[in-house]
Length: 184
Image 1 (cartoon, rainbow, N blue to C red):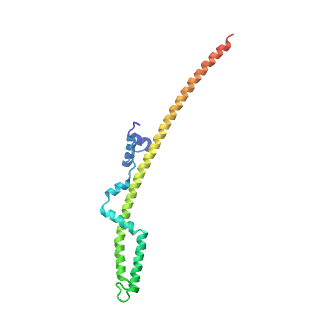
Image 2 (tube, rainbow, N blue to C red):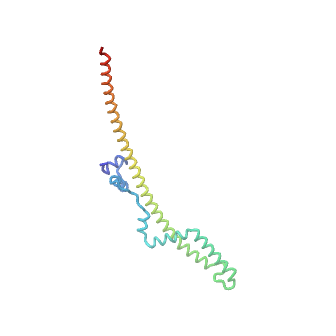
Image 3 (cartoon, one colour):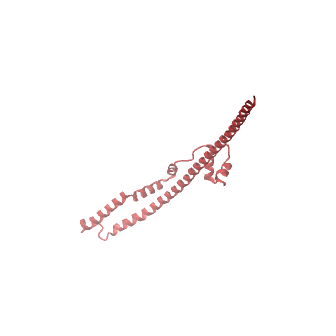
């Protein structure tokens, strides 16, 4: 395959390639892989704050956190209603608990949104990488089809030539047999 990127693009893409397609065509010409572990690349560029936000979002969105938080709320309300009826730390209607819950929600919501934004960016990177890998696979399949077509064509040409050669031999044999029959 001694073609250029432009020739491959014209042959298989039927248009001028953009940057990712150029990388795919170049890897096709060089016969190198294009797949990579995008998680490693993303993890390498994450800051401490990114990792912390992801951890908080992962913990805050888990059933373990929800169940532990429900248990905490039950203990808080039970402790302040029944056990501490006289000198309750946070008597009914639990104003301090409401303040704590509002502060947790006010802090947790933006952290979760930051983690979701990063996940969206990861999904975009994964989708772009999937596109490149799929395009490379399609190009490789088309190249295989092209090679098979060339092989089949050369085999058909070879069989045609062989049939012509055999027909010529049959014709000579027929001529020899006809001469032998005509002799007295």
